[in-house]
Length: 163
Image 1 (spheres, rainbow, N blue to C red):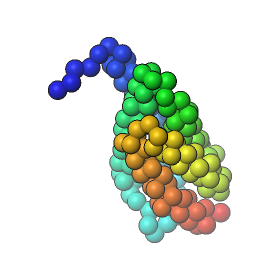
Image 2: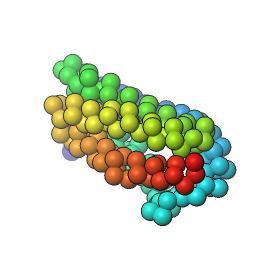
Image 3: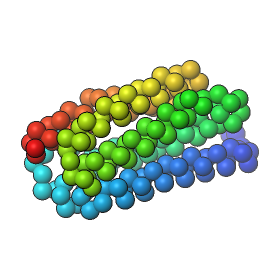
């Protein structure tokens, strides 16, 4: 088993801190809308139960720790992955902005419109990561597929049911 050097440990802590910070920011941005407003909406027939969204969120944040750690290591070692790093961070920021639009501002249409930049940035991050780290690219592209095939249609239907 590989032992980690001090720099790798520090990089892992940095990645974990960035992701934890994003998760906390998303929770703050969502405000009380998640519990109060959202529970009163009409939901799409294909909506997951709340625990399903929590599981997806846990998987997303775990994947982002892996992606950020690996990307930061590549950036520190070779100066590579700078563009990918910026796009990964932008994806995380846009994901938390989506929480603000839907839950705090209570605006399903704005959240649906916000899916456009989120999809483009996530895809761009995955493509940029393909050049430097296959595992990170696959994780980002998997998130893109989730956004495209579930969250976007879910957001569209949520808006239709709650104009």
